[in-house]
Picture 1: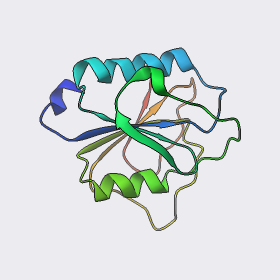
Picture 2 (picture 1 turned 90 degrees about the vertical axis):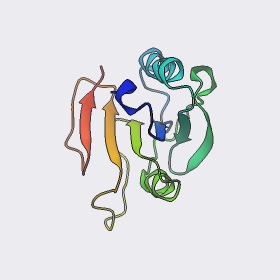
Picture 3 (picture 1 turned 60 degrees about the vertical axis):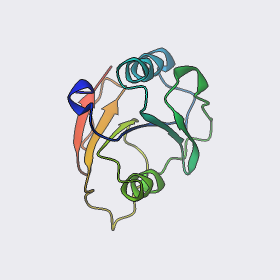
Length: 127
């Protein structure tokens, strides 16, 4: 999937709202992006965007509050004209009701055994 988007502007967002995640799995996903498409932007966010940097697995900082919102990242991706957004999350965060779709490719990478229904885009279980 990443290689097919070699000529596209890609971002990888990581939901950092909880420390109770499969960090090794998430780091391996980030490393894959780092190796295949190093110009990928890494967005770390919980209820707000914490950082936007070139993709690098060893820079992710997790929080313990459990609050997450996808709205700011989704709006950022639109403003930055991202072609494909990959979001590593359990899909339990908040999205403004007005956002019912996005005009870029959206992939929810779910690092869990349960694959929830997503509001739009495509959900992919990576557990």
